[in-house]
Amino acid sequence: MKEFTSIDDILDFAINNEQNAVNFYTKLASESTNEEMIKVFSQFAKEEMGHKAFLTKVKNESTYTVRDKKILDLKMSDYMVDVKPSPNMPYEDALVLAMKREKNAFKLYMHLSERAPNDNLKKLFNSLAVEESKHKLRFELEYDEHVLREN
Image 1 (cartoon, rainbow, N blue to C red):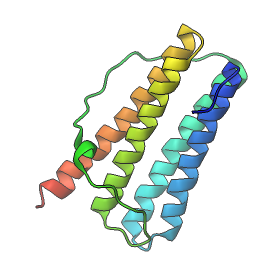
Image 2 (image 1 turned 60 degrees about the vertical axis):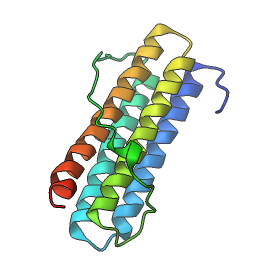
Image 3 (image 1 turned 90 degrees about the vertical axis):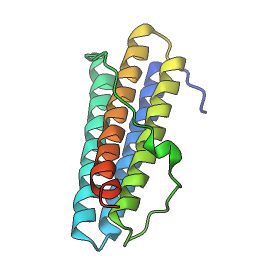
Image 4 (image 1 turned 60 degrees about the horizontal axis):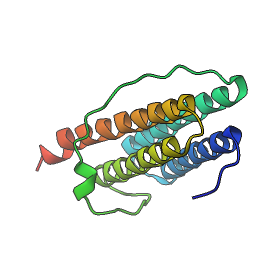
């Protein structure tokens, strides 16, 4: 992982990571031919834009509120095969893709938390990890409701 020399370096890295997620989900939405998938991927992109805006605000204003909360992890994505994004992917595959992406974002923020130079920044990245775990849980519940229960 990249070596950081300042808090701004860490925040810039995280902001860039969120922009990559926005680009990823936006591209999937634009390539999809299924209206439901377009809607799902567009919503994912919107949520990632919110994270980017939050991080940008933290960087510009040097202030933030941290929510200390744990989120249930169903660990479904731990047992799923990786899927490749495609324009006509089924909803099930889109959910798996989203779960795995949110899990990786969670891991990234936990790793950044471990490397943060002060307690406030550690708490910030822990809070962002919690947000990513909320997203992952939402996708796991959706998968349970619409895929596992139908099979």
